[in-house]
Length: 184
Image (cartoon, rainbow, N blue to C red):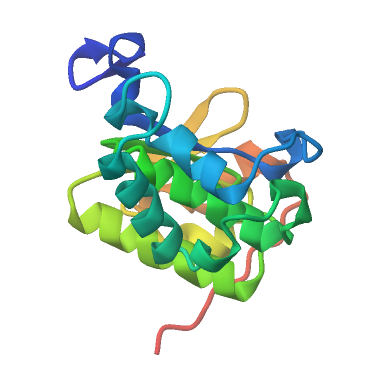
């Protein structure tokens, strides 16, 4: 896989990842600030984080509304709070390419709003975001370019190009009900 004409493996410091909540060990003794520090590892040498990286993490946790809870163990946080900590970790990484793997599943409205605001900010900064989701209704209008996948690429392009009934039927089967929203 390549990013900006170079192998992705050669530039992992340019990539940040926000995982699915289901793939985390919630009993692992990590605190919100530790998770943020994981994201800022590229700004300090092994050992203690620098004052610069501590400020980066503090700003990232503040941006997602988690600064006051930075001393809580990650497993003690609500699902939305956990996702915001992971979002802070990605922001602290100061990446160019962001992967969001089903990161909106099961989050509260506050977290959803914060995440979409951050998505907009990252986009305005020229960052590239790849948002993996099964919830088409929530995210369709917020994306510039879509890929519809089901074991293979079904369609790619704008919402209008991708969300055509024949593409959705190829992806999800014949038993799909399509409702059109009236234009206002």
